[in-house]
Image 1 (cartoon, rainbow, N blue to C red):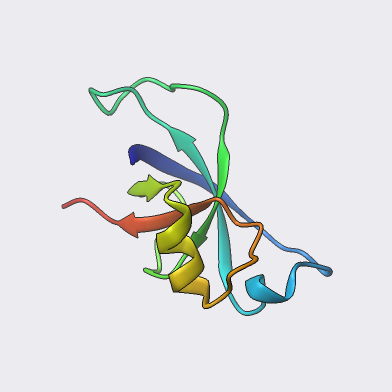
Image 2: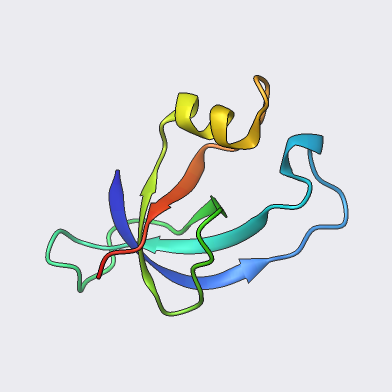
Length: 85
């Protein structure tokens, strides 16, 4: 898991069937203090309704993502699992 800031969203005309209907966000990982950037942005599936500029918690846990998308062969790696207060 890591803390990140939503810096954008994406649109795709062709995507894997497991991603149909899911909102895709571009998330910039943040340093532990929550301020500086830490690495390259990641693409994450969002089931919580996060928006641009919000801080989110993302995970690369494959099992959780497969359960969320109800697909055993999804190519999705990252998913939003929380929006901190």
